[in-house]
Length: 294
Ligand code: 3HC
Figure 1 (cartoon, helix red, strand yellow):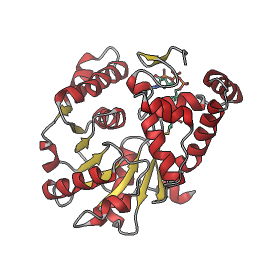
Figure 2 (spheres, helix red, strand yellow; figure 1 turned 90 degrees about the horizontal axis):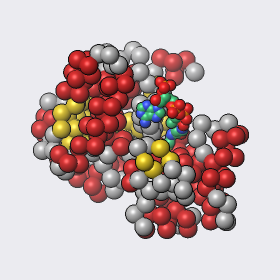
Figure 3 (cartoon, rainbow, N blue to C red; figure 1 turned 180 degrees about the horizontal axis):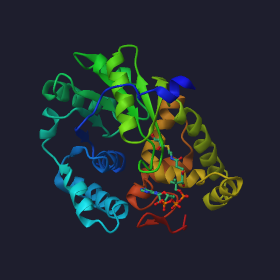
């Protein structure tokens, strides 16, 4: 407990410039939280069009946060810089990757980043389902890479897992924890094992709920029961929130190649229904609200 309380508090690390690769829900919202705390963030994705939804969400978050202070909101938004060419890599103190859950894509990205980043920049992956060590082994200096694993929705979830591999340097690990503290979140040190800690527990919970859907129980009924029980959100709505593609990746990480996906999940993903972010999952979503028409 004491170690947890102090973790990240002692490190003298004050990042000013952050570069985030991947402007999806997680990458975009991580960038937003950094800008909210005064950091200058370059946000990279394949095109400005792909970055636009993240900027729109950031604008909403800043408007709410700085209600009645439009200048503050404007300044915060100015700190989120769309950067499709990745120019920000060369200047960043912290570089966070939040791209598709594909090992080869992440390894190739970090090989390129390592060539262009400052030698003292902290390198981090937000992966939820891949081993950090398997990404880090692509680097000339694998000790530079750690996992900084946020939860969705980033704005409100207080916990962030900080993942070290046997190769991770103590300095990278300490700096990652200090960075998480700068975002007013609680860094939890975890091992580089499938699911880390939280998803190792949450994954089976969500999968058991999906198996209930396979057995014919309505998603609404499952969610209503678990909300009545006291969970903040039902497990099926949680799958929609996390993203069905991410739920598939997490399931494979936990169960290995032998993973048998719940049929309801596999069917939805095959139909391109990925949850909140695509407007359709087990529920239909409009403006972030479930229309409860599973
Ligand atoms: N952005 C910003 N703020 C948000 C938000 C968002 N996306 N969603 C909710 N909020 C804010 C609301 O504005 C509200 O703030 P206020 O109190 O200042 O008005 C506050 O959060 C509470 O929201 P609501 O009253 O609308 O709704 P809830 O009480 O149901 O809380 C919730 C929403 C916090 C998302 C809650 O439902 C919850 O905790 N759900 C579980 C989420 C979870 O378990 N996430 C982990 C998923 S696993 C994962 O991400 C890992 C991945 O690697 C797989």
